[in-house]
Image 1: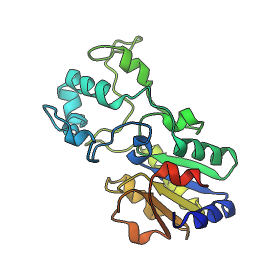
Image 2: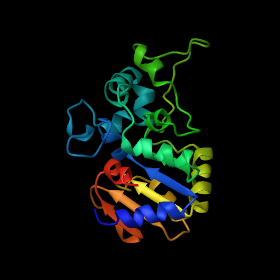
Image 3: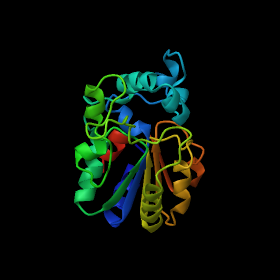
Length: 222
């Protein structure tokens, strides 16, 4: 694979790497993404996934939201793949400082990556109808950003901090089509921007190193 040797060298020379990843990192663990050929957008529901996963739909039709959420968004049998494991390994070695992810599956944490906060997915899976809090009886909303909602401000600020201080930024498994997440790479100031994806993205021309391929296979080589 072209570029692997360069990638290896850059990783060896860097001690402040940030990884920014999307759905492509999870699909290799068997979790469906939204936009791929066999992703959620091409399956049949009464409403498109973008509608179901919106704030207004959640407020209007909680039961329907949770039926979809349990069925399609909670893949608790999924295991971390080679990409998750390599990133955790690089973090343990002191090279990787942060993983910024658009995924909500907990696989980075399962592989050993640190400091990620998420609602307990098993709690929702094991409940029925609209899950409620044992303490107060109120309905529980998943700790994920729905369409129409803004990203958590502290998470954004932390991502900007890590990316702007990184000496190497690896972007993998994302079409870089979703904002504001995709806009975060504007904060990178270094000259080792690596883009690893199976298909082209709107920002390919900005990469210092472009590798087309499976994120797991590529990172396994490092």
